[in-house]
Image 1 (tube, rainbow over the protein chains, first blue to last red):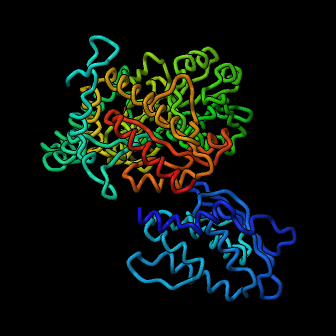
Image 2: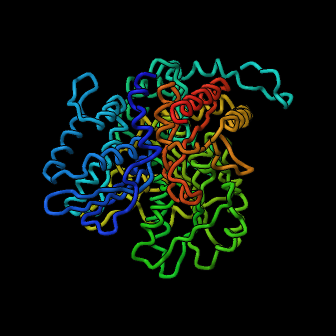
Length: 147
Length: 418
């Protein structure tokens, strides 16, 4: 069960049960929809960007615990950052979840809870869906997919 | 095979599953350090050793192209390939091997009928009738056929248990219906459809019928002449055979009128740069080098199935389905999706507050392989208002102990989440 405990950590289960920033933003400046056809995960991401700063971010949707918790943790992590900083965080997160499980990874605060997904290669897409949707929202792509 | 006490029907030999399992090498392996519990048979079945050995011996002893050479090996490969066609004919009860076309899979068979039989006949206002429980492979080819013709796809509804509403199906047969394409058994729900009634009602309205037997064919005998269907598709890898080999049955009277689906070698009578003529049935529909090894492997698989016998298989699988239903119903928060009065070998379910994908990952760590997702049947998921289900699907080699293992794994899922 040790791998499973790495994957389904308490922080993941908590964000799955009580997702943060789980609502639409009426005056969002950017939105995008993300879809994982493999498991049917679907989310809508809302961004409110003022100048070069993300002043608000939220999401809605349905999905597995990993995708929902990842989206919830991401919205917490992005709020208040500059766009450039947020893009850099995308790269750091992406590196964390795609590094082989036996290699060390950068500490990313609460986002590190998702490092356990590395033991479950088919679930990496679930963890990255929100982040890819975030990137798509920045470039105004209306739909994105992790398939 | 030895009889097992408790069989309700005297004279019927129950399966000796423990011995039968030794015919399937993969069932002896472990996954994540646990014995493999393979419950994803609706996606593909495992292969008995005799199929694996047949594939190896084809390539080791007689590999050559078919219908071409005068040399010894080409003759032997052709004989083996055509012997498989005869085996398939007998398995599905067709009148002639002319009516048996080898395809890659069931999907290719549906596409062949959609393009060569239905599309040329479609006019604006025409209709194609399917059911709400079809696999994507029996939806999308018809949408493609309708494109640009002005014809539309009609969908006969299912009830809350997942059974076809036959009265509605009958009502939706109109003078504009060009074909009815219906599954024999739902891969997502396990529902067995009343195919004989469907064919009777459709024919009474002058509508030809295609039956998708992909799921049914490894659980029960399917006889195309008894059903009187016009077309039937099936796939080898769900019949304990290799991947990449499928079967299309078509009535010769239809196949004769149809243009080729793919052009190339083997399907021609003669070729000049001005025009070509087509080979006789069934070769008109088999362009290019076919999956020779796959066809020969399928022959071995069908022999294996009939060696075990559908009566024994059906009895065993029915007992397993009842037992597995009980196992799932005993777990708090589990709800079965697909409870039609006539169903087979599929246990589709959801768990309160737990996404099927998370279920799949956790039970996998216990060695239990199930499918999670929409099962290539998104409209079925929509019908039941759920994004996905977890699905355990049974085959002849499964046991009660394996269903107990599934139950234990699902209790672990609840431990993680609740």
